[in-house]
Structure formats: C-alpha cells, structure tokens
Length: 442
Image 1: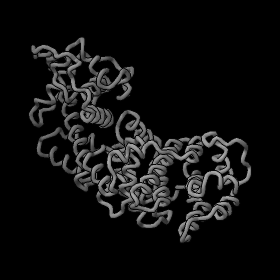
Image 2: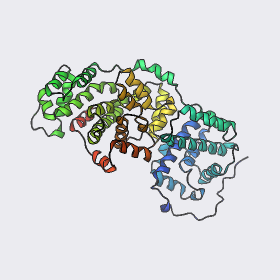
Image 3: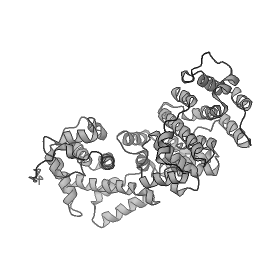
Image 4: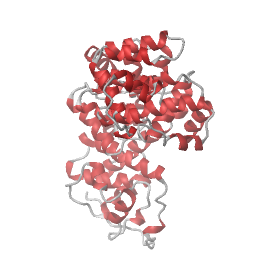
C-alpha cells in the first residue's frame, strides 16, 4: 500500500530565523546519525531512497511542521551549510519532496514498536536505531563499555519486538574487521626507528639537561636528522640573516630544548612516511607541541615525555591504515562526512584507535605509563597518569574532532591539571618555529 505523503499539520510555519542554529550539539548529533544511517542502511535501504534517508536523518530532531515545500531545502542549507548534500554522499541523487521527509519523521516520532513496514517504516526504524546508537556513544564518558555489549543491547531490543530484526542485522555487519584481524597486522608495522631508540635512550639515562654537544653527537651520525635541524634553524620563521650550515651552530641558535624535541620528531617522521599518513603526522606534531606546553604550564608531567607521547598517541591509526582497502575507505568516508574518528574506529574494528595505539606502543617497548596515557587519552578520567589528561586537552586544542566532546570530561581534565579555561585559550596560540618548520616540510 502506498503511504500517504501529505503534510497534515496546518500550523503556520515559523520564520526560519527563529530556529536555534546555535545548538551545535543537536546539529552534530543529527549529522552523526545521518552518516551512520547511510553506512548501516547500505544493505537495508534501496538506492532510490538513500537521499530520503539522508534528509530525514539531518532533520530528525525538528518538527515536521518546518518542512513546508518552499523552506525545507533552505533549512538544510542554513543548518548545515550550502554543501549539506556532500555530508551524506548523495550529491547526485534526486531530491525528495518535503512531504515524504515529513512522512518519515512522523513515522519516526509516532510509530509503535515493531510496526516498521515499507520504505517509510524501514527508514524510520533505521533512524531510531542509529539515533539510539549515537546516544549510547555520547554516554560513553560516563561508563566503560565495549561495542560488543552495546550490540547485545540492540539484539535484546530486537528480540523484544522494539526494533525490526532486519535493521539490527544491518547494524550487526559492524565491526567489519575483528580485533584478531587487526592484531595480525602488527607484524606489518614499520620498525621503530633505531635512531629514535638511541635518542630516547640518551634522554632517559641523563639526569640533567642534554647538552648541545650531546645533541650534536646524536644527530651528527644521521644526515637526515642533521638536515632537519639545520633546515629549521634557517627557516624564515626565525629570521636568520645568514645561512647556517653547521649542525652545532644550528642547535645553539634554536636552543637545546627545541632542538631536543625536533630531534625526536625528525627521528620518528619515517613512521608516517606514506602519503596517506601525512595528515596524521601533522596532527601528531600539533598534539606533541601542545602536550609539551600543557606539561610545562601545569607542572604535572615531564615535558619531554609529553612531547614524545604526543607524537605517538594515535599510532593505532597506522594499524587501521593496513586493513583492506574497502574498510579503510569506509573509515575515511565516515570521518570526511562529519562522523568522529572514534565512531569510524568502532565500525571498522570494534575498538577505538587509542586502544590500538597502546598495542602498538607495547610492541615498540614504550614505558608502561606512556602506554597507559595513549590507551586512555580519550578517557583520561580512567587513568592514573596526568599525561592522559594532557593528551586529551591537547587534542581538543588542536581542533581534532576525534570523539564527542563531553563538558564533564573536559572539566575533569582541567581540574586534574590545575588549569582554567583561560589557560587553554592562552596556550592554544603558542607555537614552536622549529616544529612549524618540520610540519611545513611534511
């Protein structure tokens, strides 16, 4: 039976400007639901109805009265920007009339348990599942639960008739790779650079500041490292009036502290050598620099360790990049369309990249407290180490949208580090010219 697609409400349409577009929480949630629904719905929703699914997902928190024919697309553009269609990968799909979008939203908000039928019902059922799934992700800061347990909850709801079994089977396609499959990729990881091992060993064994002569000895045996430091010293950001050609002079010019961090970063740069990893390398440099600054400001952790773990805090993403191409493409698609990296991680492997980072750092024989900081940098309240809170705040300051930020978690991290919101604002503007130089050369 063809569903009635007319809009039944006769209430006047409010002016679009009265909509609260400042509520970024609702908009972000709706965007995530749209991204998730498009992936889960691949085997459930016919291609001809995917645009309808996308539009209904983006608007699922708004009353159907707003979907007046001459306003619905304008509202989508106002809420999500003129490129809203690219958020869902439906740039070239036919536009659906607002009456059909309204029908889906009515079905979503008024349907009884287990009544999904026809395309309208299937889309409504899928949206409710994806909405609840995203809300479970939003609640993760307040509980320690795995994806397997969340999916078990959905199984129970399907068996009770709350959701259509076909919808839950579509959700159950994920994760696409098992943790065992990801584990097997460990042997394909690049070897931790030998020169980085020597650098770190020297820093750990030294009871005082590493001298310029020690830094010169470390970098002097590696032309690439020496070249990175000399390049940084000659960078235009330093305003050098003459060309510096000697390593020792370059170290003195930029300072031992900056040279030390630059040496660590340059030694580890080959780990991120592939073109696909360049954005991760730049992000790692940003977080390392911010973590160093936060450690100095808060005086709660060693600044060199903060910089080091900042460089490798997302090493788990190296593992994810080794998965089959179709899985890597799904991860990229979810993040490019507005889903947080942690959601993409769960859909791909069932765990987040922070847990995978801990696995990688254990393989590279990092100290246990640095492994813990990396493992919990998205759940810093569970860590004994202030470094986890430092990494969490550094990620936020870097502008990365890897998880669903929770105000309580941010407050707890700031309290742990004895920092204020103004401290974070002030710290976010500080940069290191040397690190900027190596970032620019990435």
